[in-house]
Length: 280
Image 1 (tube, rainbow, N blue to C red):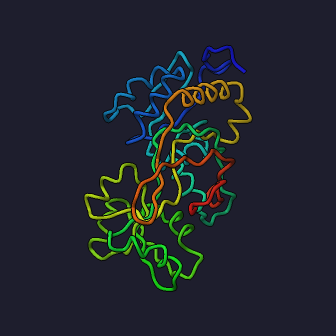
Image 2 (cartoon, one colour):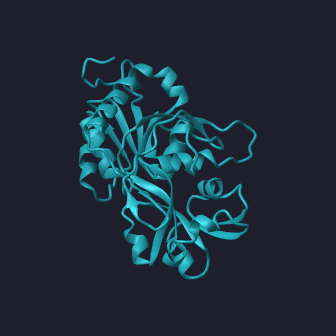
Image 3 (tube, rainbow, N blue to C red):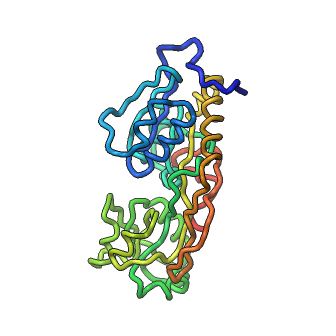
């Protein structure tokens, strides 16, 4: 597929291959993978800190980096603002359940590679007193108030049974919701569990594991295959050489056990399920 050298885009110097990267917690690890894949402009980002420039051109590789919010990576890729993107599986699962009415079919992004970076897990959590009864409660009729930044995942995981699930969307500080009586439980992304423990919460159930995924715009994948595939191969090799993540799974008493990330999957359009449901 390639001779081992990441070459600039053939015949199109004015239009670099655009790769959207997620700002925040995942960026240093993802940037390190990109640097090992031959994108020198990503190397300073691996050191951490808040980057001042949101657009970086790497002339040697012919790649342009866009730094955007993790939740916006899918939008940049699916709507054509970027050819490729790296974001968490949590974002893809949330977009898979985010069907919105419109006058045209929603675009899609193709999930290519599990890069295994930024390992964490989507979990149901709540006060420690409720952990022992959670397996029973989620199967009983009644009302359950769920605070979350991931309403589509929460509805898909906890809805459809005897529980009447009321999802309370929050943009942040989700851990406060059970403490002030706003919600019974939360559904949130957990890495170390430190923030949960600081607020007296424990994990009740893991819904799915999440790692960084490489996604591609469908049209770009068809029309720019010669430019895209060598970079995909290098990113895949860089990820394979890194230590395997261990996002963990949690049983109902809050004990963390070793776990594995879910595999990469196919096209994901807004409102479509990805290859694996949130619950499980």
